[in-house]
Image 1 (cartoon, rainbow, N blue to C red):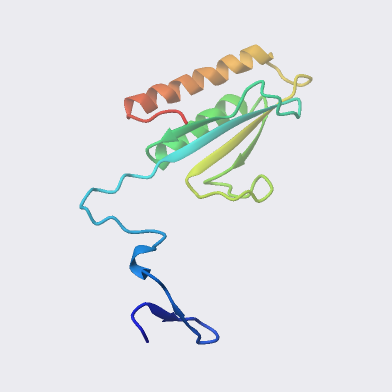
Image 2 (cartoon, rainbow, N blue to C red):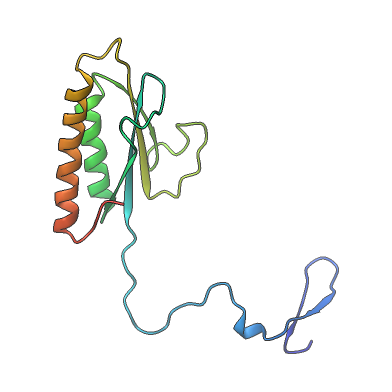
Length: 148
């Protein structure tokens, strides 16, 4: 077999590849730099009265570890699960929202706010949510991360 050709599986036909070594989709880095730790993400969405109207746009937060992500998700759950319905899709429940694909490093939580049944008003709810988000932002800044 020639240097710039390969045998295809199935029919055995040989294909000539011009400059095969230069056209790689991914080239591993061998420069000795340490690999950066992958980030974990939390996306928080609010569905007000069954409509995503932009009243509270989705926010995405980055965390250094699954422990930090799980802590933030637990904070959301303890703050809002008694009052509102939460839908989760992510690390613990990969297909909770209709089989959405998840890379295993993110948690997507949707809080369903219904004005007819809510025990708190909309502005009080937003204040509680922003307090949690501010805490996560402070933690992220402390660790050198940012809100996405």
